Length: 110
Image (cartoon, rainbow, N blue to C red; front, side, top):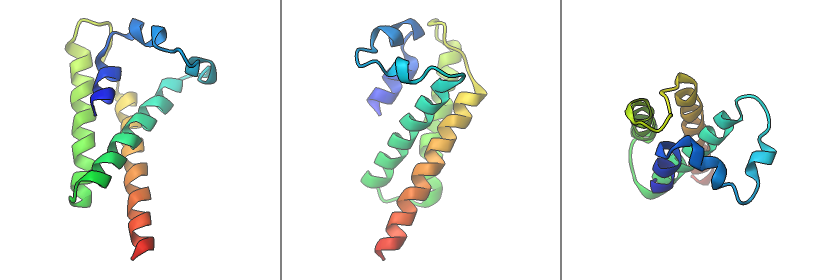
C-alpha cells in the first residue's frame, strides 16, 4: 500500500526520473497511465483479499475509498497532480478485476 501511495502522491516530475527499467518505452500510447493505475489497484486489491477475511463488498469498498482519497489528495496537494475521474475509473477496474479473479480462484478450490 505504501508504494501505491508514494507513486500516486509524489510530484509527477519524479515519475520519469524513477524509470530506470524503461517501462515508459513500453507505455507509449494515449492514456497508458490508466493501465498503470489499473495494475496498481489490481495489486492492492489482490493483496487485501489475500491478507484479510472480509466480505466481497469490503474487498471492493476499501481499495475504492483509498483510490478516491488519493484522487482528492492529488487535487489539493501542490505537486501539479489533479483529480481525474478516469484514473478513478481505471483504479476501480483493477479492483473489480482482482476481486473477480480471487473469487473465481476461491470458488474453484471449494
